[in-house]
Image (cartoon, rainbow over all chains, first blue to last red; front, side):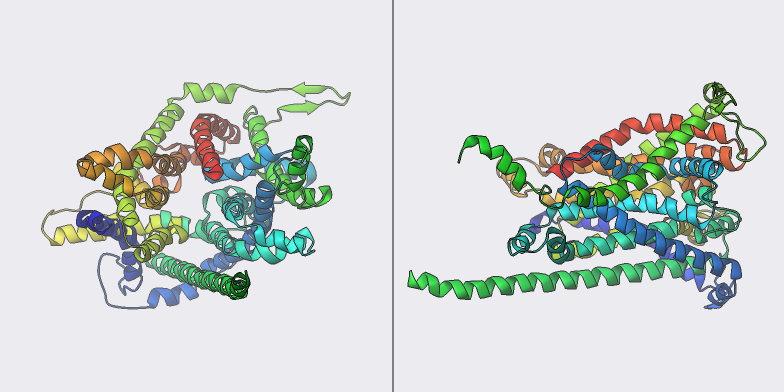
Length: 289
Length: 312
């Protein structure tokens, strides 16, 4: 298809990619600017990073956000995977239609609506049952709700395309269904599990709108702190913080991706080896015939 | 085999039926179903109820819609004032239409920029495709809020763009870009472009290039082949990508709040202000419900195309 590769299209693609990356690269460059005036280059400095480490408000907010993201993405992984198994493996059950709708709707629901409705639920529940107080608990619950939808959709498509012959073979050999699933299908879908956990983690870490609605007086997450600072104008220490977060996320995602690709290649090689050894066994038999 | 046994055997063999027993199945279905029911669906019921209440100076800041009196009589006191208010105050209709317009034109812009990009990606060699895919996906994996903020460094009065243009002598005083409609469009296109590219790329990559060769063998011009073959075949990707940009763009809050000005009354901002500045929870609930009803059609279309995708 060489002749279909048009240089104009490729130039356009490069411009598009530049459009996506230049703002982030510029921000990283500014974060090393010694001058507090963001328009003037005052020399290279890591001053803003040092200042960041001494900012108690940002540090505690970052810690809170990491805590929430870890708990929420882990719970979402469990609930979302269960939902995916239910939707792929059980064809008829009461509530199937409801569950399908509820794992797809959060993906397109405007965050602001999810935030308002969940806040109204929490205040009504607090009045009726005395639980939950607005704070970490309510933020985690809200994050689990939308993250589990992302997990369910990701795992669902991977599970639906997974080859079930290994699992069936395991069951033919006497493994219990749950055990056969755990030993054969779970490893196959594990890349989807890892990537959906990571996705949930980043979504939770980044959420501003929903958290703003359901958080309590002493539970400002990192995006909420950043947003209130940004609202007042550009500040160089936020450039440093944003650069740190974006780079950390980038490194984690690329590493995880490379790791999963390697695991995938090893599994494919194993399957090939198995197929080849099977070929070795079957060849003499064919000769006998 | 007797034909009458067939359905029974088929049912016994069908995946799922032998996967786990009845209890085991509900141990799997139950937790996510219950959780999402209570914390995702039921909240809409509460929002609906509270949209019929009235704002009040108490905690929580609204009146009761119903009360049960001492002699077990249900006492209903719903108020339609909030919904009446939505129709009488112009702000809501204007901001809703404005959001629709903004989302629509942003989607078109994303499509115009994203389609050639996805097309170029789909025609790259297999190895390059993997790398390009990673490059397009990576921004989506970092932070949405911080990427919007990163734009501010570029388009501020003292930002990079104005500095460079002034240094080149193209302009002699900074262009006003922040807090304008341009900034809102830029922000939406910048943030949502990957959402448009990925489904487009997925459909274009699967396309059978033999069709294009056949068309050119039969004497069709490249642009003619594009409009007759490539574009219709990539339509599912166009629809999926457009929905992924259009739906969240309507309800967008962060972009108009950070980059937009008073000329950009998007519905997300109006809702936010109603809640955090006017503290009128019942009106906010009513706006949410009305907004949701208006979103129902595009959401249903999205759901439908996704369901069809999963089946194939």
